[in-house]
Length: 208
Ligand SMILES: Cc1ncc(COP(=O)(O)O)c(C=O)c1O
Image 1 (cartoon, rainbow, N blue to C red):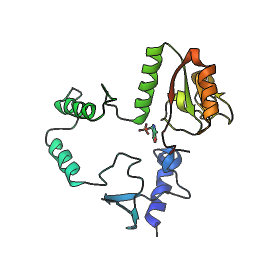
Image 2: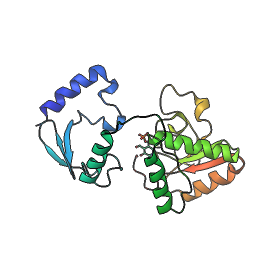
Image 3: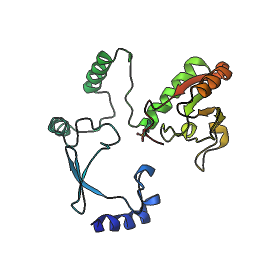
Image 4: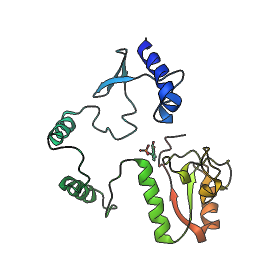
């Protein structure tokens, strides 16, 4: 029984476009609304329990409400939660990450994957002085204009915006090839060599 979720979705559709805050949550005929989560289990507002294979789309590697994380967050709340200034913890965390991953020399913290991929592409373009980048058809890299493209299949195609509100000029440097088509990737890289700044890929395509 999901009566409360159904009602919440009816209300949501009146105040939130499409009823959800991210398209990935737009489950038909309506999504379930989570009330709480613990370990591997989500409990919805109608008290149904679900095994969560999604884990916040990745980041919850310790599961929901892990005591170590909960305690650390609770400790921090005692000291305030938004400063707008640098903090010691970011230096410690960045040092920890760079010490664990030899390939990461420096890093910058951002709030969303969208900001991360946007910054990466900007850095690649700035560094190389080139404009184009290659992505895989169906790959999702966030909600900024240049990556919201789903071109036709076959050899590399130039980007056609996936959403209203994105001028075609903003996606004309986005190239796409089909996943697992090594010949198309080779051809795209070779024929765009002079203006290709980056290749961006989800190593395991999770968003098709
Ligand atoms: C591979 C990948 N990159 C980027 C993003 C965008 O992240 P965000 O929704 O935090 O902007 C997502 C989100 O699902 C993703 O799966």
